[in-house]
Length: 542
Image (cartoon, rainbow, N blue to C red):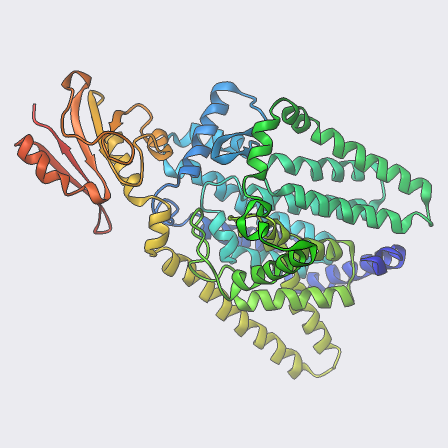
């Protein structure tokens, strides 16, 4: 970083000239501005389609954390402005819940209502990446970056499940754009915008503190490199950034002071320092070796040796295709050599340093590093276009055509494999159906349809009647647990509480035989999804 930041002025002028040339070139390719707008809208439309198709069936079911988003959205509708941090789902910032409040208000208590908020955040990241990259690196790079992010299965997956997560890459993309604009304009106003946006990400997702540290390191290095040239301007810019940053963090600081025990527990719950493996390490040298090993292991798990995450179902297939990972890392090296603009340096820092969010914690490693995805797409686009530009300088068109054809084949193979892996291998996987509680979801949908005077006796070895998906999908249902795991097993009922219905899930489905012997002539309903048995309901006779 020091090489570039010590000489920012020539780089900035070269960048403006390069961007101007790229915009001139793209005009001859795409024609008018309106044609370019249509192309961006088309890419965004494809992104929306990939994130929307079969939304309620891939993944199959409804995760407890997804249901929590819906219930938090309902809390926003009831209370209006809520605290910036919620203890739900082991603790999470609350900013994304405001969009969930709107979608739940429109589509009510449904899977579509909670997941469409993720779709909106994920889709908006596509034009946002285009605009930010276009502003710094030109239209072709912006278009290709947005296109690659559109078809990246890693981003598609998190844009289809109702975790608050997809709002985070969108916010980081916009924040990087604001910082890049601040480095170009040099005005305190833009530096204040960049500072406020950098800090505000802490209200979006738990892993943002490391991102915030990276953003501050970049800003500090950039401003320090200019100090000897224009100290007065640097002082004004740094003050604007720091002041806006601190102002944006004040609500969270105030909340933490009032709720320190809850906040600190949720933040440190998954620290690697609390694991037995870390405690057994002998001194700083062993700890450094462990961190390095885990860092390298992250990149292996990202593409070559995926591991299934039992919370979000990533790792059933490769998270990032080998082709895109290779192109991204190669493009990062090329961009550092040939372009060296602020967005390149900042993107490099994010790609290389964000894996420490998973190295230093347990679980959720693909969630805590999702902000890498748009910048991998950006660097892949840079690498492709820079290689094509190099071949064009050889004055041998055949070499350029070979390069273009080669990249088309590589991308075609990588993208098709990635999409097939997600929508078929992952979408039809028994693992993701188990993680997203397909059986419990189907049982909850049946409970939702029962008459109001029904009282449910629920039996499952894995889920309680009060598990969040039921509370969201069928909030008015009355019932109790009758499994050994969550309550008292028994076939006795209290008819004064309502008409009894036994819901049998998992290993408790064979209890139907005993129920039919105890209460003959009841009504049996067998739940299924695509031919897979999910639950058995037995309504006792009057």
